[in-house]
Length: 135
Image (cartoon, rainbow, N blue to C red):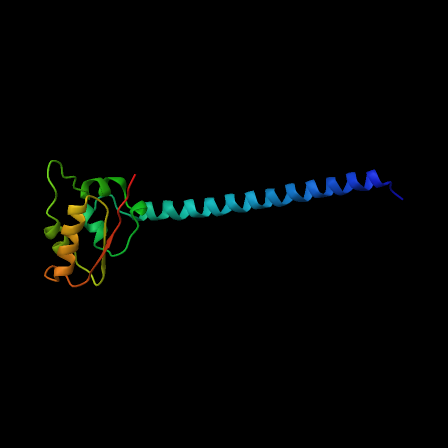
C-alpha cells in the first residue's frame, strides 16, 4: 500500500509527534506542581505574623529557614569578628533531645568542639561530626 520511504517518513512523524506530546504533558504537569508549591509557600508566609520577634519564630520547634521571614533570620544571626566565639557557651545553650554538631574549619576549632562534646559536661545529647576539606 505505502512505499518503504513513505512508511519510514510516517513512522518518523509519529515518533516526533509522540515525543512532543509527552514533553508537553511533562512540562505542563511540572508547571502545575510548581504553582501548587508556590501557593503553599505563600500560605506559609502569610500565616507567619510580621510582629513576632525572631526568637518566637524558632520556639515552635522544627521549621525550615526558607519559610521564615528574611528579617528574622538576619536579626537572629550573630557574626563574630576578630576572635573565635565561645564554643562551650554556645553548645551549653543548646537544648534538645538529640543535637548534631557539624564542624568544618581549622583543626584547632574541630579539636575544641570535639573536646566539649566528648566531655559530657555541657549536654549529654551532643553528636559530633567533623568535615575537613583540602584544596
